[in-house]
Amino acid sequence: MGIVKISDDLHEEIRKASTVMSRSINAQAEFWMKIGMLAELNPTLTYAQLIQQQLEACNVTPPEVIRT
Image (cartoon, rainbow, N blue to C red; front, side, top):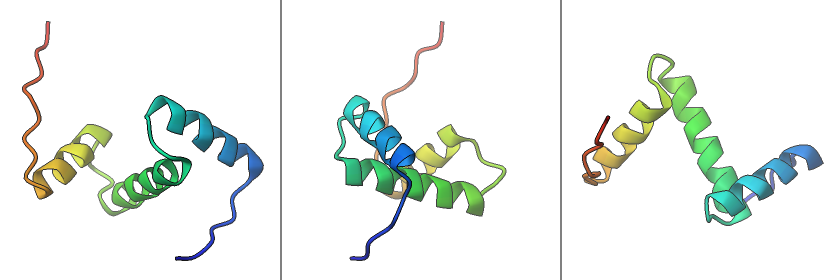
């Protein structure tokens, strides 16, 4: 495992987001890095499509979304 240096401002944003998302600070940073990497590799996909793709890769069937 390596060390990644980030700005104090970004660290604070990760800390705040981790609280909202109920993740550790490291897990939140890792999630953002993974989504960023996937977005760069798949520039035509939306965030929702990236998440759907990752869920399907793990054989997770999310509940149906009810739209009003």
